[in-house]
Image: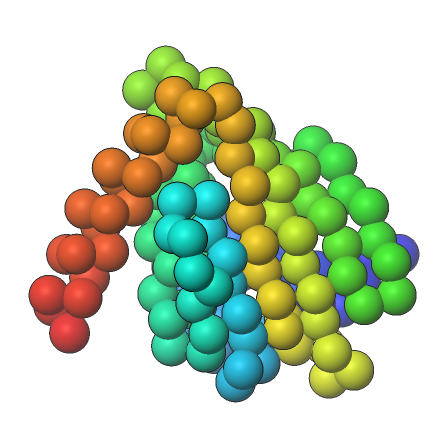
Length: 132
């Protein structure tokens, strides 16, 4: 049985429902990106990054291919393809007793994929923050 926080994450990711992140993310959630060297702390910035990731990564090729869980954390392996680049990565997710995500760390390979995602995410994040 999947933990409730992971079930909710899967549902939101599948539906590309960034509005649902407000309930899923803890106020003090910490997000770690494969291309940003400092952890991003707080619900607002984490929501921004995850919303952009849903749009950039969440194409028809996106799928989770493996999952491993502990009592309050899990690792989800994913695959997708963008512009002919096969992307493989993991989401390391921690949650609290209220089934809210408290930590979200993303790792991606290969380097070509990281470079592509860096460019795409950067452009989208700039666009999203310019809109307010």
